[in-house]
Length: 358
Ligand code: PMP
Image 1 (cartoon, rainbow, N blue to C red):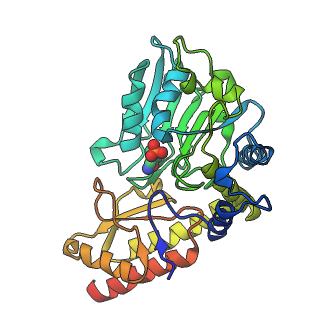
Image 2 (cartoon, rainbow, N blue to C red; image 1 turned 180 degrees about the horizontal axis):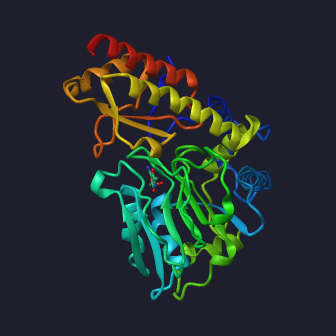
Image 3 (tube, rainbow, N blue to C red; image 1 turned 120 degrees about the vertical axis):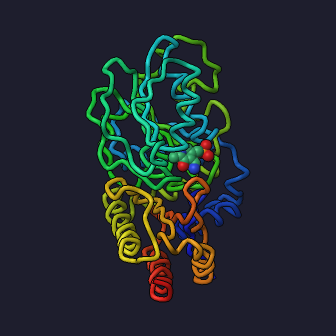
């Protein structure tokens, strides 16, 4: 039986994408070769890269000022590559600390310039997105984490500032429409809404690169990858191909507007149940709740039932529901590819559990 996959990442991909990927791994198109065993410089694969780039641009509405890069190293490498490439030693960048991933980005960036942390949600265990701060006009960029995978919070507004955003969108890229004009860099590990682990999507406004006053290793310089269309070295061919399949899937289903509508519907189902069910309590402030990662715990008085609920979920075929250790409880990750039917199954488990115990 196919499980209902609530893992946070690597995470669920559309079933049709998995089928096509499996076929391409065995024999791609009519080539008589696996996609895993052909050159990244073959015309067939160059066409994959070009289509993937074009679809990223089309779906996000990116203009010619932006380069789309297919890199490796994970979002974690972008924590330092962004600062290394954009910020000189004597310049300042602003950061907002909304969780573990933001904190890691801050730590890495400090090696390359002055880092001003404008606000942090740490005191409330990152249950809300800080809102009361000003952005210094001299900052080179403002770093944000649009969706906090671990703590289940998400930006549903953007700070008012002329300073360009550098944004970690690992866990909500392509989940909703975006006004990209305000973003200088967008980066994301592919392994949630896009494809397999091993690909890092980086979108860079080209005019921001090449200005930092330092010598960069060739591989860590955005300009290298811009100049060589992400093929300075061997790019992660299979993750790029699978991501292309997902991008096509997103487009066929109506693009980011359609994704957002469907994601809102799925999230509402589960948040409504959390709010109605005496056994459970959501951990994020309502206005900052993530539409991708729904975090909740047993309500006061029901704590001893945690293990029982997880067992009931597994019994119903729902896997990956255990929360991250820094929040505890449960986390249901409901990315683009998560069918509404799977969310309904989990909600039914919650309902039954409430009827039995509350
Ligand atoms: N940022 C966010 C928001 C994440 O959720 C993750 C991974 N879960 C990362 C960064 C780290 O990504 P990677 O493992 O690709 O380095």
